Image (cartoon, rainbow, N blue to C red; front, side, top):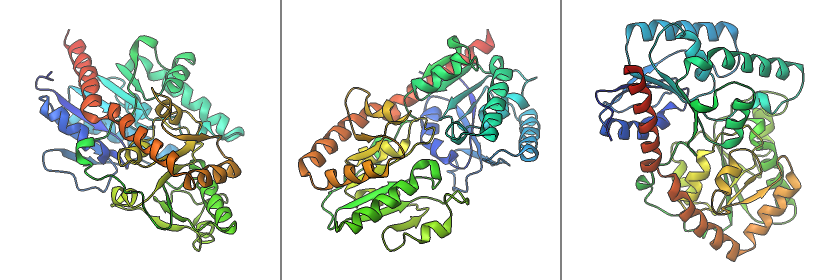
Length: 370
């Protein structure tokens, strides 16, 4: 399958470098790829990378600057298709290019924090979110969802037309690049949580669970990996510092796969509006048993063909304590979940996922030419 002379632009945010592996497949299929984002990653020479202004949180002034940047950049640079992979570009880019005819497609990678919060400000933001998506739904050729809950939400609220949506479970993982499997023989038994450190990812639940297990006399080791992205009364550096004697808080790391391989189990106690957590695939790919929560995105992974993790109710520290304790003390459960995960993750290989994206891109490009 080829995208004949297709010039594809992938637009994202700070983790847009995660699209490099997909780009390799697009290039192999005959496309020329440009990536736009806010990542500081060192991109390979065969991909053109452009850094641009994008703020993750809502900011009217910043968002207007982003829209203006899109207008100028895509006026001066032509593409056969533009695809977005992040929350704000999914609606800011179609707004900016409302009067252009370049096909736009997008992947909804979760609904985000505003759908987890209550109160007037969250209500206003959700209302704005819906209005913005409604205003540009005809400008988007196809919207890709990573779970059925988000897809149903968009269709029900008329944020996207049903015949212009499709489902691709996860952004995929390049399994051929993962050469090691965790030995899972750490002493002491080691739990690891890899996540952006925001309250809705269940970070406090993980920290409190670790503290409780330590107080109960269990000699487990706890790792927390990821950048702190919140400075609020609920989660900030001062709060993290209070757990330094219990949890090894490692911050942002470039050796995440090595750290996973040095661990015994993976924990993601999220109650965030997940799309399809890639980190679950990474943990499963090295054979780690997984404990997570019954939230959108996570359940799509776990219950797709075979139960591949221990799931608890979100935001329940006591339940997390019992799950972690039960897993650490049951070697047979560890073995079963490890084997299931290693087999389960194969269906999310990027070789398969990329073919689905290539078909979508090719269709959108061809429809424009008709």
